[in-house]
Image 1 (spheres, helix red, strand yellow):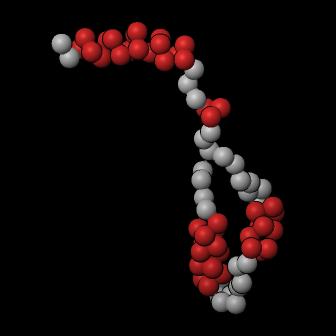
Image 2 (cartoon, one colour; image 1 turned 60 degrees about the horizontal axis):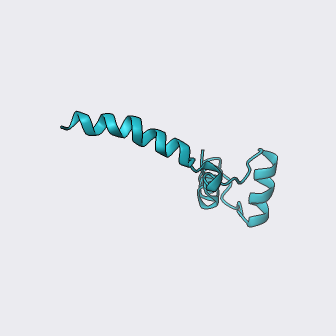
Length: 73
């Protein structure tokens, strides 16, 4: 599930305040250690490796697209 650094920092401050610790400093170092401790990693969600092949496009056009067009005629 995608989450951002600002979101993690904001939630950390919110939880800290609710627990009575209003002096928490959420620095970059704190965030790096938190992420490492909890197994949070940074990944690319989408890139070229997720592209659809030309063969799949041709097959889709000749089957699904053809059926869709026929249903509107």
